[in-house]
Amino acid sequence: MRVDFAEVWLATMSENDLINEFLNYLKFERHFSPHTAKCYAADLSQFCGFLTGQRAGEAPAGTATGGAAGFGAPQTGTAVLEKTGVRQKLVSVTTEGIKTFLTYLSEQDYSKSTTARKLATLRSFYKFCLRRGYVHSNPLAAIRTPKQERRLPKFLEPEKITTLLNTPDDTTLLGARDRAMLEVMYSTGIRVSELVDLNISDVDFTGQCIQVRGKGKKQRRTPIAPTALSAVNRFLELRRSDAKAATFDPDALFVNKHGQRLSTRSVRRKLDKYLAEAGLDPSISPHTLRHSFATHMLNNGADLRSVQELLGHQSLSTTQIYTHLTAKRLKQAYDDAHPRA
Figure 1 (cartoon, one colour):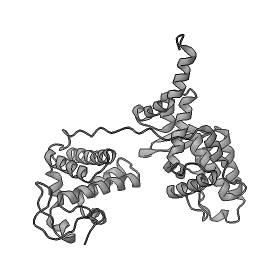
Figure 2: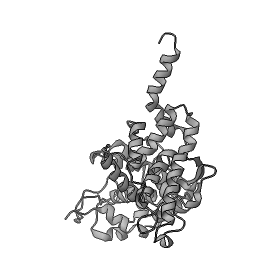
Figure 3: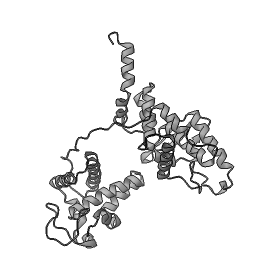
Figure 4: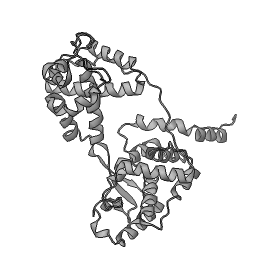
């Protein structure tokens, strides 16, 4: 029988006091989103399974060999949690143990980006353990993150954006909602998680801006175009006149047909629907609208610092990837200005 031990560990994560303490730290002190904390939990569950020899897809037969080098042999079933001393294994991991884990990931054909993310999880976890005094040294201090190929963000040309935004039928309540969502995403460049978190009170029609709650609960005010505000106003007018309006969530800006706050998954489904109707690339995601916003801003003369603030990026280096997409504008500027061009 084949068992996914990542699921076993996630299901019993609350029984591991050290990891549970770390996840609570991410949630309540660092204000990580539930989705991000879940990703950290999944990475740590895999690492725990590796330390005890219980790896995803391997049979849990009580064999005497096959455990991770230096960490003992695998054991059977849910008794793993009680018999292997997971906490002790976690706090006694050495740099060599981390290297062995990286070798395992390589053998499983994980991409460099996925490996880098798992390393980032472990770095954060062991920095936490070091600060709390649970370990005497960080086993990842001498580990370098594998160099990755930086993929350029995908974006839509302005004319395709226009086609997409004009696709929803805003004569209906749900169509007007979808038109407003797409307009807001492209107009402001906000993340889809920030979009669904918007309240009606976050929209300042007079000041033409919105209040955004970003990563780590950091708030920012960002301008919003009149066309997007007009689409939001159109949706709110239809929403107020709906027979079921009294049962809708009174705070949430974007709600589903039952009047409850819309989910990020629902936004993706709606986008997929309109991409198909407009005959556009089906691989486009809500984040593509964010990439398009940043690229078009830079192409039209916005400075990098301003775009950084609008996107809510903590580091300028995160925003700098968009400069690779503006080469066409720079080439045109060179041709226009240089005497020898």
